[in-house]
Image 1 (spheres, each protein chain N blue to C red):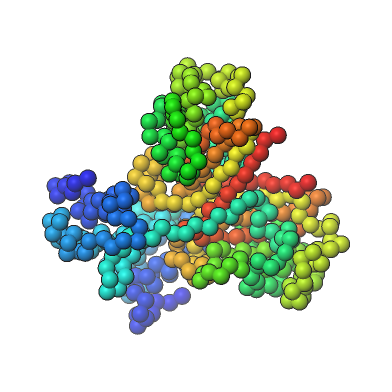
Image 2: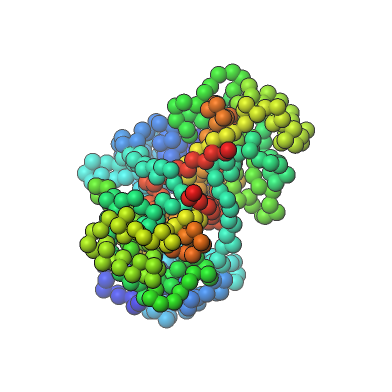
Length: 248
Length: 248
């Protein structure tokens, strides 16, 4: 592609497309340094502000990244993490065989839980006393920043000692023992994409407004009583969801 | 929240947060007009360019929209479409009971299919002659712009008359009759989020770079032969995916 100085498309936008083309074609491979602003100005006979604006937008879109004192680089291809065997139970605390891979951020009675759940799941979320425990947790992987943040809401009436049990690091199998009537047997979930709010962005170490995957699950017991609600926020730049289906 | 003129955070960024807070709290409800630039300048003692920049960014982020000659409005909440009962078979052409709800954009032998599929699904995509039919289709809903675009790839060796059959508008049940060995029995899919490319953006009537849901499915016959590959691109601002799981 060539830049057209008489086009109604602004030059910086044309330059963006040109640079994207060079990245996509492999002319500028991932992780390598692209020519300096000055070099691009000379090569393409453009002004410095034009080049600067194109690069600055590509940086904010994540295509390029600036390393101070070293130059502008093509962003390295992200290492993706697959969430395998995904189902509506994936982010269920009560369905977890073990809590070993969980990292608990917080767990306590949440006085506003009912309000949050009605907002997220619509009407039909049972309220009543003594309310819900909220457990904030993430994976235990040794990464610089977490892949997801999950808030699990569990009716305190069903598991009155949940916070104490988690604090004591009791095993899930002991926590749920003799509570079979309250264990999840069915689950439905909604997967959507939205923009990260300030809290999520800070926690996940991404920009506010960056797209995140939101997985909201409602779990019910065999007799249809809601026993758990989960809201998981996943970094969409890193996490893929894998689903297997069979037909009998 | 209050604006802090001595903060290192630029005033326009503070104003953006303030306006978002007013939208989120319901002080400015969806679909209503917000105060004019001049009114905001006076209320908050800000300069016109500061107010203009905050509003212009909120417009490009989709929080606000400008209606010419009428003012600036809080964007109406988007009407969401739920893809219910989602599974790895959802975008399978060969698994469709009927093609009535499909709108075919194009169907033909795709000479580059194998290359595209290897790029999308990795190694292990069988090549060989006579290659793949590619069927581009979408839903048949009467909307201004489609919700998704799906490309289904089907080995021509299994369904040599597929293009002719689709052109003749034959029923799926007739197309797949006596082809039971080639029908999908198992499917696995990957759900990811990425930025729309130019072609996708144009087709779905969204901005290039807007986040889209990408659903890639690999379908195999009872004996494990790959019989279909699908790549569906969904508007993430409109489509939610709903999954139900049961535990026996």
